[in-house]
Every structure is written in structure tokens, then in C-alpha cells.
Image (cartoon, rainbow, N blue to C red; front, side, top):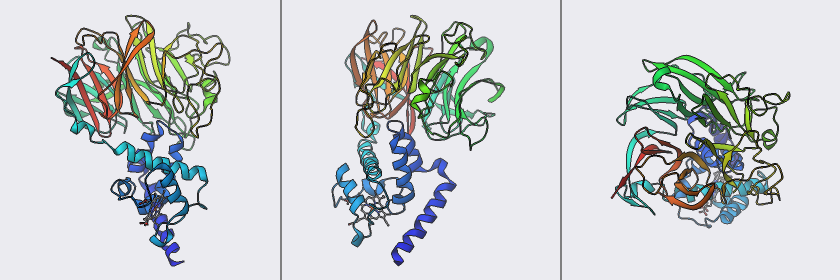
Length: 477
Ligand code: HEC
């Protein structure tokens, strides 16, 4: 009895202290990372944090260092949590949690352990000469010391600006942090939200406009937050002339699927992606902004040739719909093709070519399956819905998208690059027209690959997170 009382007090303290600094809590952070692949993990992670972490530490190191007594498969962990070992101080949780919750907890711990294997992959990797199918690559470490470098741009003077999802924007010169940009708007760093993508206006040299996306509340925290697009100029490392160009609605307190990628078409328009915010119905409903790709003029006004501009109940900014969580968006100004990648539910991650007014099918059609393994939708195709160029089962959790340009990378010209958050590698898709003929996995274990950009001098830069590092890919003999 006394024991339970003690545990109760302990949990209460943990609970209260956890609430106080949820923002930089390691489990909350883990939760965000995992949730990218699997939203059910959000609930498991908060259960872990509020109940298990009191005895097992909140960074999973208790499990990682453990000489396992009862087995470390998902099934074993589930059994341990369900039955407990009261004689040894491990309570039974079969009355506290449902069977599904226990399974999810087991999955969280198991996945966490699995992910930790090779966590230091990059340290063990010889970055001087990595042999790939067509090229040998040296990985230059350009920038370190970030958390989640979500978006990056190259200024004409050679400096780089980088968005850290935590809500900070930095200026780097030759790899050294020389300033933190001041005057940022109010950013809601919640779950996968925070300071997101980054673009320069195609005529930046003339007009000085920078564009970035982030999550913000327009009413209050109680109502929620959603993806927002701002443009501004920078003077003395401070944002000036700030203008909110787009605010996705409705707000919701869901902490995932913000989308947030931005790309310009070079003809005065920009595109911005917005995730369905955890609600599939959103993606098929034209009267809200979620689960869509939007098209705006570069000053935030709405082009009158947008596909639903004249449809009374539709948002005028919509360019395409039926998207789940688009984390890669790239307008190829040579071919006028808009490329996109998005997270499927569990498997079914897609690479798409986006066309005006088109429906990409989520959640009506998908190559994914439900989190609990049951069939999500028996349909992978329907009339009036687009098919992906390629898809991934299991999910790689794609983020970042770029097409190899210029002549620095012999044999990679025109290839589509896609990052994997989940498996921590870069995918190079060889194309024949619109068809993917080969997918090469490169730099396994480099880190959760978040963003891919080509610099003005023709190098590919990739960013990984936790810890945040930016690498430059240099071809070597
Ligand atoms: C009051 C403290 C306490 C709490 C709360 C607690 N555990 Fe434990 N747990 C222990 C102890 C102590 C052991 C080691 C038992 C042993 O050595 O036989 C253990 C063992 C385990 C094991 C088995 C490890 C092995 O070696 O095979 C798993 C799995 C586990 N706990 C999961 C959980 C999960 C999941 C939760 C949250 C739902 C949780 N625990 C909550 C104290 C706790």
C-alpha cells in the first residue's frame, strides 16, 4: 500500500515537472520524431512519459543499457508491461492501459531501441570517400550544432540562412554561426510544428524578399495552430517589412502533418504545402486549407487562374488536394513540373507530379495499411484520382526533394533526390521520363534526412536532424 502511495507521489511530481517544460523534453521530442512515421506513437509516448518514465528514465537509456531479463522483442515488452513483475518493483499495467495501448507502448520502446542501433552511424562512416553506384562522394560537414535544420537558403554573398524547427533562424558564414536573426513572428513550436521551410524570391538580389513557413495561432493556443507563410526582408540581421501571405485554416491542436514546403515557379507564383492535420476528411474537402497544395502570387494575392478560383465553396488558393503530409515540394523550372512527396499512413509514401485541380486520393486511395495492420482502404486506385510516380512500402517517411542540376554530378543529372527521416538515408531516383527506373539508397544511417537543396554553385546540400548537421556532397575520383 505504502509502495503504491510512493509511486503515486512520484508520478505526480514527474507529471507536474513534465508539464512545466514540455517544450524541450526529450520524450516529447522523441515523440515528435516517431510521430512523423506513425501518429499512434504520439499517444504511446505521452503514456510512456507520464507513467513509465518515472522509473525507466525519459530518454530510453534504461532500456538501451539493460541486460534484458524477460526478452526485448515487441511481444516480450508487451508481456512485461501487461503482467509486470511486482516482486521486483515493476507494476502490472493491464488494468491501467488497454491492450492496444500496451502494444503501442511496446512498439515505441522497441522502435526506439532499434533506431538507436547505429545512432552514431555517421561517426563510424568514412566520410572521405563513399562509393555509390555511379559516383564516389565525400561528405563535407558544413554546419553543426543545430537541432532540426528544416530549411536552408544560400544568399548571394555566400552566407547561408538556416531555419531550426525550434523557432530560430541563423546566419552562417563559412560554416560559422555569425548571427541569430531577430524579429521573428510568434511561432508555435508544437509537435512537428515550428519554424519550417525557407526560400529566397527568385529575384532576391533585386527585391530582398525571403519567404518562410511556420506554425502559428491566429486566435489562441486553446483553439490551435496551423501552417503560415510569411515574407520579410532582412536588415542588420533583423526581419523587417513582415507580411503574412497565407494562413492555413482551420486551426487545430493536433501536433502533426503541417506540410510547410515552399517552392517558386519562376513566373511570379509560389506553391506551399499543407498537411491534413491528422484529419483525412480535410484532404477531400475543398472548403478548408488542409491536405492541399496552394498556389499564390509572390505578393500573397491569389491568381485568378487557380483551378477552384470561381467555385463558391472552395478555397481559392487550392492548386491540388487529397494530400496527406507533403514534406517535399520542388518546381522544376526547366520542365515546368511540380514534384511533391508525402507521407503515407503506414507504407504508401508517395512521389507525385502535381497538376492543377487534381485529387491525389488521400484517404480514399492509398498503398498504405492502417496502424493496427488492418486494411485501410481496399482501393489503390479510383477514377478521378491520381496515381503516384512511385511509392514506398514500408514507409521511408520522405522529407526534402530536389532534382540534380548542372554538371557536377556525372550520371545523376535529372535524378530526383528524396530524403528518408525514418531510415536516415538519401534516395536517388533515376528517371526515364516520368518513370522511376532505379532507386539507390545512399549514406545509410547518416541521420534523419530533413532537407535537400542545390546551392547556386551547383552542390547538393543535405540536412539531418538530432543532432542537426548540414553536409555538402562533393564528387571525388
Ligand atoms: C514503479 C516503477 C516502474 C514503473 C512505473 C514501470 N516500470 Fe517497468 N520495470 C520496473 C523495474 C524495477 C523493472 C525490473 C524488473 C526486474 O528486474 O525483474 C522493470 C522492468 C520492465 C521491463 C522488462 C525489462 C527486461 O529486462 O526484460 C519492461 C519491458 C518494462 N519494465 C516496461 C515498462 C513500461 C512499458 C512501463 C510503463 C507502462 C513501465 N515499465 C513502468 C519498474 C517500473
